[in-house]
Amino acid sequence: MKEQEEQKRMEYLKGIVHSLPEGPGIYQYRNQEGSIIYVGKAKNLKRRVSSYFNKYQQSAKTRMLVSKIQDIRYIVVNTEEDALLLENNLIKKYKPRYNVLLKDDKTYPSLCVTNEYFPRIIKTRKRTNKNCTYFGPYSQPQYMYTAMNLIKKLYPLRTCNLALTPENIEKGKFKECLEYHIGNCKAPCTGKQSHEDYIKNIEEIKEILKGNTQVVSNILKDEMFRLSEELKFEDAQFMKDRYDLLENYRSKSEVVNSDIHNVDVFSIEMSEKSAYINYLHIVKGSINQAFTFEYKIRMNETKEELLQLGIVEMRERYKSTSKEIIVPFELDMEMDGMNFTIPQRGEKKHLLDLSIMNVKQYKLDRLKQADKLNPEQKKVRILTEIKEQLHMDKMPAHIECFDNSNIQGSDPVAACVVFKMGKPSKKDYRKYNIKTVVGPDDYASMKEVVFRRYHRLMEEQQPLPDLIITDGGKGQMEVVREVIENQLHLNILIAGLAKDNHHRTNELLYGFPPQIIGIKQDTPLFHLLVNIQDEVHRFAITFHREKRSKRQIASVLDKIEGIGEKRKNALLKVFKSVTRIKKANEEEVAKVVGPAVAKKVLESLNNPLI
View 1: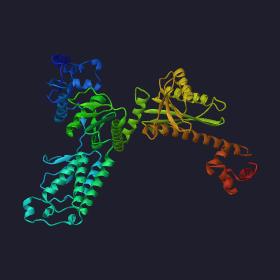
View 2: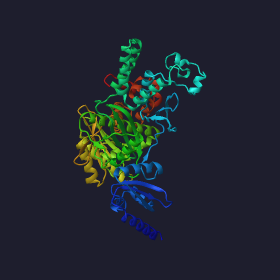
View 3: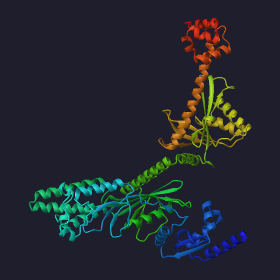
């Protein structure tokens, strides 16, 4: 019965697809309850929608979406730009389950110019009053605070919550407060500042917040010259101070030539589950708006598709009228009267680089925040990065690393450390005494140890690692490969850590012939690999020192007459070292081995020749 229902459903949907027009528009997928679960746009509706039902092109997420579709609705529009705008509006209205989700930006502050007789400039996180004028939101609040500090120095505005209506002021309901007496307000509450003068200041503030600082600078300059001609030198000096303050702000905020005016800049960075898009609006060479936001990826959308959504969203939100949009790569997107630029050099390239720098920093900050909340997620992300860099089929949850240690061939040992989910699994560490190799032959030692390790794991049917790392270059990797592939016939990826001329780890080698992957320092991936390398060094060297120390202790005590294995172990168990035995008195040693042997032990150990 279910098969018949499924067949009937697919026939119904394919019938709709077959009759779709071949023009621009948007399409809606609806589930059994009639709810919209996905909204998309298309240059060619028929071609785009039919691609969802092509089994050869379906990802797992697409198959899941298609399995939920019970009906298809569509709206035909005149242009691709209309389709983009309509898609954006419908996604925001219905919030379909399978569309990318724009993360809520309510936490970002905006500046609000209130709709009052004497307006105030306030910081807010809500845009509830349609009659007020809003600037922002500011994803980087330092821009907002810089603008607020400038405004405070240029214009003494009221900060009180009093109802300054003409009637209340005329009745004399208010008195000057401390802000008036320290020069931060001109007391419009008592009529000391006229409504006309106050509103003139508010209009200039709006121009500054829009980025039109040149307009306000010209006003201040003209006013300064007018007052000077009228011989009002104190007032002219006050106006000059304001003019200099604004010019100083302009010189710091201007990032390119002021001829570059009314331009939008966009860039994008991706992670496994999110896309981060930065938007800059440039007015007269200065950054007027700067905002970075995040999309939660739902359906394996491409960079191009997500950037298109971001461009439409930001331009609508900020009411941008820019005719030029700077982007990092070519987009299959047309907007009436718009010119898309991909700069290769010059000041526009500088703007694009600035946008890219901002979006990368935002991505890094978001990932750091996520790592603090969920440390395990950080490990998964690093291991996923290794998987992608080494083109592995699965994440290397189980990593093993080997190292040899000897001094000119004496006391040769080797060590194996195990990392599971990016953390050391010390109970799985193993030490090896080299048995078949004579002399300082690192390659032969590595070959012996790797064979012993994995031959035993196979015999005991223990889990094998996803990745083997050698603390060496191509030679060590080849030796391990010979054992793993030729002798044991296993399929385990092998990588090697290589050092630069200063003996610092800087490359990861993988594959045969080995390919080089440069490792950026101060990245989580670099720290994990160095941690593995340091741990195997520490473990191997500690084991080598222990073995060498035991051999040296044994050789001294073995030379003493009357000391056999049993008495030697008893002495070491009590005194821990030969040095402590030397420092002990005869009675203390006699308690362990008897008076006669104790005398011989102390005489032998304190003999200058020993």
